[in-house]
Image (cartoon, rainbow, N blue to C red; front, side, top):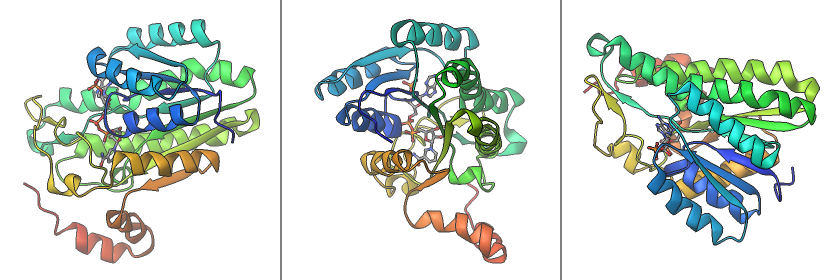
Length: 264
Ligand SMILES: NC(=O)c1ccc[n+]([C@@H]2O[C@H](COP(=O)([O-])OP(=O)(O)OC[C@H]3O[C@@H](n4cnc5c(N)ncnc54)[C@H](OP(=O)(O)O)[C@@H]3O)[C@@H](O)[C@H]2O)c1
């Protein structure tokens, strides 16, 4: 797939994987729309994208607010008339036990990680179907393939992503809508620092595993390659990705290893 001049909208583009993707698409001379909830960080990413001499637009909104999502889509369609590639990437993680986590936290994670992308997809799909072309991506996680301690709602939101986008692929193939699910393992970003705890505060720590992850730049390269090849799923990471294969092909080994995971 040719990326030059395509209109690409990336959520969660103020840092980490989304930020690296913004630069990678700008480098490919796509028309890049970047979104997140913090305008200062987003403006800094926009400036850096502009150094690649391509068109960049920053649209700031909160993924938890349905009305803001609708307004953002109206703004983008008014400016560009279409979106060729939508990357539902924005999200937050979690560090709390099920028994200690109030339901509002579960709902918050589902809203930000799952429903925001569902709504963006539903709002943009009609224009993609009309032009008989589009590519929708969503960032899941390896914990969208299995459960993991302290990440119950996070893992659930990523499992939901798997089900929704796989269904989307089946339903809209006839309209030439491509769907790719991004499955990161460990990428060195702020995801653990920004993770939500049982009292709704941020966790504030870089996990050791996170710190050892691949760089966001490397992850962006892998994702762009997968888009060009129209992959159904793309695993992004290093040795930790083996757990996905173990769960699928050697489940007994997976459960033995997973039961040793530290729960604190
Ligand atoms: N890093 C990993 O190892 C890893 C592993 C598996 C999956 N993932 C997934 O990869 C995606 C990107 O995460 P990352 O690792 O790049 O972490 P990150 O650096 O913390 O980036 C998260 C992005 O999501 C945005 N975001 C969070 N809450 C938002 C809200 N309410 N409204 C609008 N934007 C919001 C953040 O922007 P603002 O804070 O500026 O709003 C930021 O741009 C996430 O879906 C994450 O679950 C990451």
